[in-house]
Length: 402
Image (tube, rainbow, N blue to C red; front, side):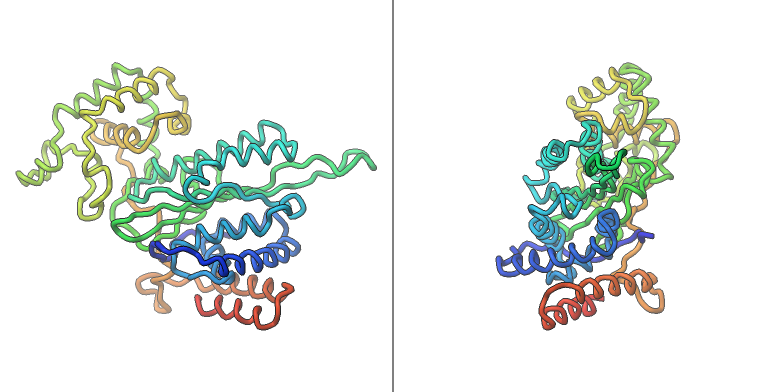
């Protein structure tokens, strides 16, 4: 079972030297071949979706344990390591950092064409990729801006229906998403993990784990099960039509008090209808502090489009073009203030592996997960074709990081 939680790492502004990247690619290729031979492509994808295992693999491949660059460099190294061997290994990696992340849908479609996948399968992978990015930028509003998005998937080969009829048609196995956001002011990064077999709903608590330097006091989390009523109200508002929706929006506009004025007059109650009541000391750079949707014509335009199309579900609403954090916040505010449907403000990152202690203070250490991860990766290292000294160094890095 994949453990949900947090591993601590800071924002890394440096660059990975070529010699280190080459070593990571070489060792990564060896590790992938051993792991897939022993556990299969689907299990490899499942492991990638585990924050502890992902972090540990990066450590084995010689990168810093606590640096945000581990995410981007590890993904790039793995992608390069399997280049040209994707079909044989049965795993595929799309996307990456910055501009490369925006090419993820095109890369998925390219693989779909090369693998002769049914169009619906490739389209579904693209949809899952886009929705994971949309959810972590619009529904989990924690102040971290996404800059890395990678999509992993495996392939299964069905046996031929008739003996001697060929190798059978391939079909998608498992998929995982690893994406990362940064908060420059806090000097930290946060990584979001998704795994297909853990997901029953792309909107409701879809993460297999979220890695972060700290658990924040106040986060608007529309993916939480405690936000279910808020999601329902938001969907109903979009289905009611533009006029009724704007009637509620204008009601808030009439009685809302800008946060700056609230601070000036010390008014913490009464007419305080500022977006979601987030505290400035926790979100100094979060857009909600400066958000004044009362003057946003773009928001009105988006709401008009949404109300016209009347999405049947909250997922359909979120998936619509133009719907982003501000639209989500506006409807959540209407639902909370007017209809009493409060969303969750608890950070979905529950605890920190890095800050755990043997006495469970402040958080218990999940030793079983760590021990299992170390054992699996250590066995894989021993089975590679590396020299004995290289094996010892890799295992030493893994043990040191634990």
